Length: 319
Image 1 (spheres, rainbow, N blue to C red):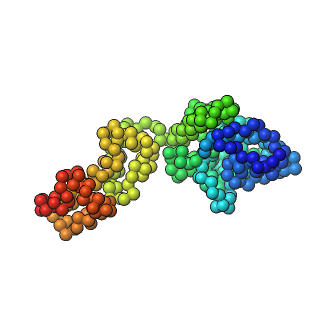
Image 2: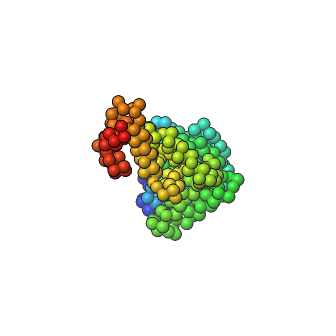
Image 3: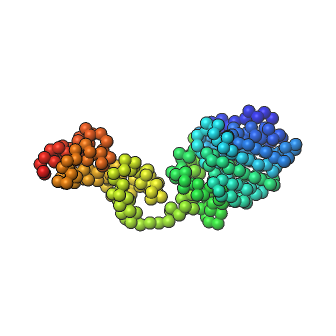
């Protein structure tokens, strides 16, 4: 068969029988990212592949004789693909995976995640069947370093959430040919969300913390980092191991947006400094810059909108 196969956008392939290692390499490369594939059975290699491409979500079911897959530093350096995560579900046989200093033997029913931007190795010593989903990192609201704590580990193999992910991936792979591209993408996106929930659960981030306690901790964090220009909703969420969406929801219940709260607290710090006799020699611009207002005219307009007078007018009045 030809090695020019690549699933087109929004389509599902029929089951393909592959009789050569070179053809298998071509399909693997085009279904995922460039990989180095080897096998001690290259002379009588056999595999079957069924793949789906739904927008930027790829799903591939592979059955094969023993082989090794490597994502090397050289291949990563030459790659122009969007950074992505891969999630695999073992259906038959076993597979060894190694990444980020972790390694695990996956057995039927085990789910594992790995990162296409860092080296990894997969070893299949026996006949195997697996489902592999690949999707952009931007669909997962978790930082690389947190996901790296879970790469090459068996995820949720002993709980119902892991079983749910396994079931969804298996059903998705088996039924994609029955749905259109739009419906299939929604199902695929739901699968990514479920994988993210599993990752959060494994990280211990979904263990309940009372909302008021969490919000108090966030307020304290903001106060501590008000002078840091890098303070942002994303940075705050990362520091508290929650999603940006969850952070915004917490502040919505408090009746203010995250950015508005940060801006208000910074303005209040500026007003305090402007009224401080010990800082009389400091310019308005210097005080504004101290609290991360880099643009003096913008600071003046924002201050006046909040307090009804310019920083200079306020300072002259309270001096």
